[in-house]
Length: 123
Image (tube, rainbow, N blue to C red):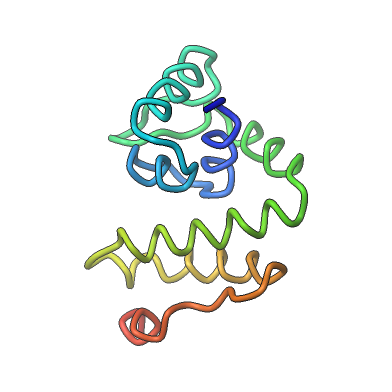
């Protein structure tokens, strides 16, 4: 796994993210995700922040996002929404705004609707 899927995942998530979320977003196995993460940290692209990882500067994430095709961006937003729903637990209501953004951005790839059971829990 190159660092590209991991850096793309971090760019679409736009907020500090934990290792598990980044791994699930990037689709890599644990070892490859750790290697990619180490590479991005050593290259000063990502930094550790409050138990998660974020870009050293917000413009880095913006540049990565701007370089994605609309199809890839849509797929990554759809994946972000699904990963966040799956891992949110009791924080689902707190993540409603983020989920809305991800589902709206994923609309270009179709099937970008929250699961009915989660939509009820977000209210």
